[in-house]
Length: 254
Length: 254
Image (cartoon, rainbow over all chains, first blue to last red; front, side, top):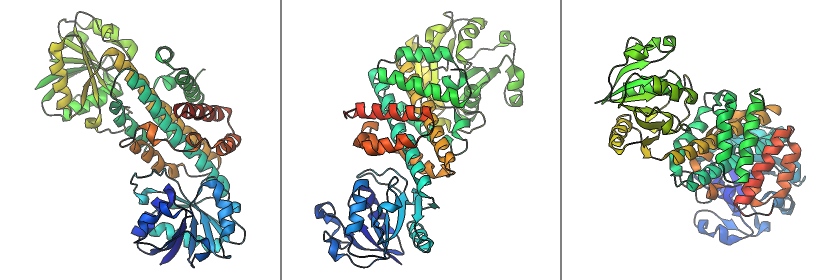
């Protein structure tokens, strides 16, 4: 049984709490938030607190707060030589106060308030300062039913950056498509099977092999027609740049 | 029972053939290709031909060839006043020879050679010159188990354009992510659950509502860090442009 104290009350903390609660072999000792109101609805199932000096002993302290608050919060913890991890993709392990046994427990997924998520599908990227704590974080991942990957800080930063491309930027392309279909009063839903298939295709093909469309075919007639029909400047710019990127990747003439 | 003659031997034609073959209530009368070798493996289950003058009568003739070949092929068909449709997203209905009853039967999906596809998940965009042929194309979609949508040429062009964004451009973002992870020797597979969740999230949230990340949070510190860590110029440009696009969409200061 791994005992956990959870620190923070945002999306990641809340999804993590629910997953820890559901898991066998883990127990949440306390849930701390500066602002009690955000976690008060859970007070009947877990001990909640806003008093950092009242924190009890646990196997792991998970700091799931905004990137900019991690460092200060870790130094305010009224103990030392305990295993303290943060959950951020982009913050260094060394941003945690050095009085702790430091680690990172980064769930690589997009967490939305209110949206349910199968936590067992979330890969956990683990980093530890001292190898002796590796097993605890591995066990914690396994208790949650998650795959875990040991990555160093550079690799975690690369994953966090790559995640912006496949999540935020991809979602923005969906948004552009939504604007294009709405401008002609067509149902955006028609595109959803294509969106799903695009995401599924890379299970069996690399993104390189999966590419299709006018850019990789070097079909400049269609590209010209598309560019002409785009109303917004920013849409044209995105079309031009990503077409250029595809052509570069596939060695086509620009 | 709807009888179909299929013209062409590319990815769309082949996937369509297999779906027609599987469907009840449809029969493939003939499959024509200029180049017999590409369809000869099917000769034991369907009549194949490379002689355009030998085409028999069918309820619908489906021209599934490259965009540039549609017009010429439709005029070479040795009959008139039959229902002839093409399957292209970007070619006008009027590119078909006017001796035919013209229509469009556009399956909006990405078709890859050899990759299996559940055709019942493919939305069919239908356009007809004369309303009397609408029912035949609706029935054909239904026989294939597909949802159908009646769209005009402008709307179909908008869908085809939007499809480039959600399919080709999204796939290129996956490719960029693949390059980023490879450069640090991290497993690209770690990103796949996030890719899937990004595509699934828009089932319940609009792309506008689903957006997260540094750009929509106006987290310029992280944006700066990301830009600094990107090695390739084209990756930096994509990062900058899509960040700008997200900020514009969400009314953030550029």
